[in-house]
Length: 110
Image (cartoon, rainbow, N blue to C red):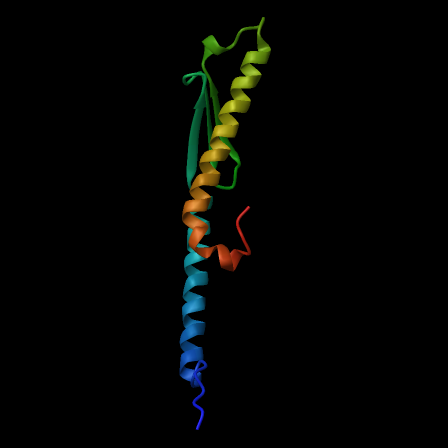
């Protein structure tokens, strides 16, 4: 007689469902934790500092007075962009680290 080597009885399926629900709860908790985490990045040796949430929303932007040169506004703009980009990179890295185990459930991480 051939023996079926599938999932077996309904008990195994119920266990798989519990595991999937637990993983989903864990993933949602990690997403919430990430959402509430603040990330701070700097540019120009601390001349510009930006703080962002895990949702990439700007919480604060600090500019040291010596970074403000009316004759070189472009430099200040570049520092702000650099600080923001560094903040986004920090968030992306943390997202990959925290959510990587759940990538299959998310359909991939952007």
